[in-house]
Image (cartoon, rainbow, N blue to C red; front, side, top):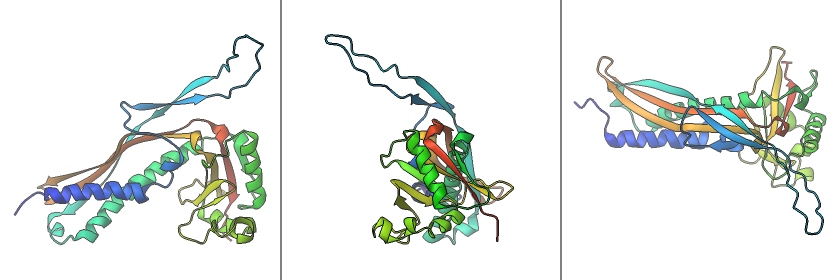
Length: 277
């Protein structure tokens, strides 16, 4: 009996893990600035300040904007998600079971990717906070956050995103301006397809991994893509090795990634009470 998985099986398994991660593993990776194939232990994101336009005299020199430049370092960390597959169990594996194992590894790494991004979002300063300890997600809170983003000149260019907890998502569904076609038309109703929708020029989505403190106050975030950076030294990889002493293969999924706050003026934290009734 062979003591190694067929090479075709390995290649297909690796492809399935990678595809599962890309398709379902991370909700937030595509909502922030991303750098891939990073060489070394850190990535650098450039931060550029606001420019100012000025006039010039006839034949005079064109005034320079004197943009401020700074660099934000994003350290990378290595993450692993592995499991054992008994050799005799392998003989019973069919393609559906293999997909289950592939999805499990991809989901674990995807949750870690989102955790890194959410941790960076949560470092936003207190001045960018909308809070009322006695209420959940309300229209008033949304409008206050909307004003903060506009007042900070955050671009309204279709690259704004908002992530909320599931409790806050259910509260949004009870706001007419969010959920009724009289306000948003029929194309952006939140009850069609997956649980994500556009509202106020922003893609809103629920997420189960947002931080909650000891007083049951959930932190939700409304941000622009350029406010947070995500870097990958290595995207998801899979290694399958045979261990005779265990009569099993070890399936190891791994990646090297990191995330960093680039510009907190592009983020508003909305704190919502979700104390159980």
